[in-house]
Amino acid sequence: MTEQDDSLEPIIEILREPAVLRADLTDRVMSEIERLPLPGPAAPNPVRWWRRGWTIRLTPLRGLGLAAGLAALLFAVRLGGRPRVGPVVPLGARAMTQFVLIAPTATSVTVVGDFNDWSMSATPLERAGGVWSVAVPLGPGRYRYAFVVNGAIWQRDPEAPAADDEFGRANSVVTVGGT
Amino acid sequence: MSALRLGIVPALLLALTAVAQGQEPRLAGRVPEPARTQVNAILTAAHTGGLPTEPLIDRALEGAAKGAPAAMIVAAVTRLRDELVQARSAFGETASTAELTAGASALRAGATAASLARLRAVRSGKPLTVAAAVMADLVAAGVPADTAVGAVLALASDADDADYLTFRRNVQRDIALGASPSAALAVRIRAAVSGADAAPSPGTGQTGPGVPRKRKP
Image (cartoon, rainbow over all chains, first blue to last red; front, side):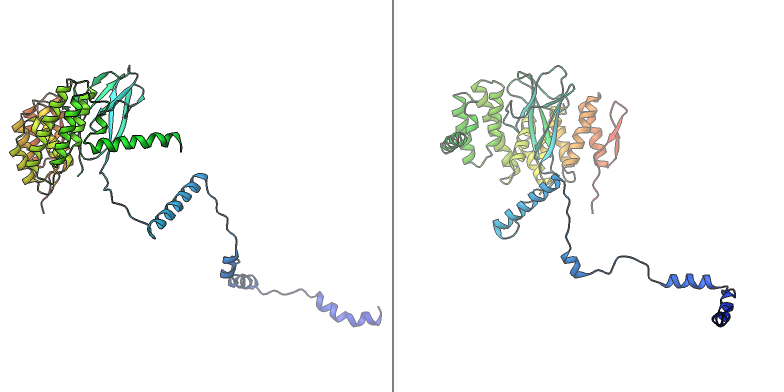
């Protein structure tokens, strides 16, 4: 062994001694870790929020709806400087009234009455199987009507009250309430 | 200028001319002469007298759609005009077209002008259309006119439109199930006045909802 080796010998002896760890080391380390702040998003930066880009995704239907809403708003503003509120139409002012006729062999059915100038072409019924039907908006009132089957056969509604008739063809009547 | 626009302008001018001359454009081409001329005269007089003309136009168009002869159309329009006058005298000058039309139907069914005036008095401030219409509907269902009028008046102070329609529907259902019109009306009016939620259908043993009773404050 050289002279240099002799000078290192005490250090080597120290390093060869086993390290003595305190029994509560693990608990102390874990408690220190728990005290540290959790990683997460950075604090909000107002400047960055204003400069950040946004992506808006719209379906075609919602896009059209949004465009229609904006157009309506612009139109209202141009009309009077602010959106106008039209006359309030109370709910139930016009009730959808369903006219139904079971006529499996019919090729066409229309309803004629006080609500459509007794026009044979104004209100055709739609067929679903043997059932013909149509919905008509009616305000409060008493309306006389009849069905015309195949463009020629007048028929009253068997499910509705009969109405007086002065022209030799039976009518039915529907009464629509408002309260 | 498009062909469509070229067609619309003369049509509008013709319509305006017809109105200015006291002619209802909807009658043209549908109501035959001489009925159209006579009906137009009735419409002009009605308008001058403050009567609604729409029910009269509807009646004329109904007759035309059903292929009725001219004399029959004029007679029907004239009769309705007279009934509207009576209804207005009973309901008052402020009555709506719908109220007058329903009142005319009730008169046609057999109600008197005095009973309509009574209805107006009892239902002060309330709409009369459905009440008067139910009068006519009950008579059409076979209920004697004076009984139907009495029933409608009995409900007049409390019932709203929905109550009247429910009442009428129940009576008509009972009749359809075999009850006599008078018996059906008697049972349903009793249930309605007493506020019973369900009343037995006469002669059928079935039950159904009655007219809900109004709670007075």
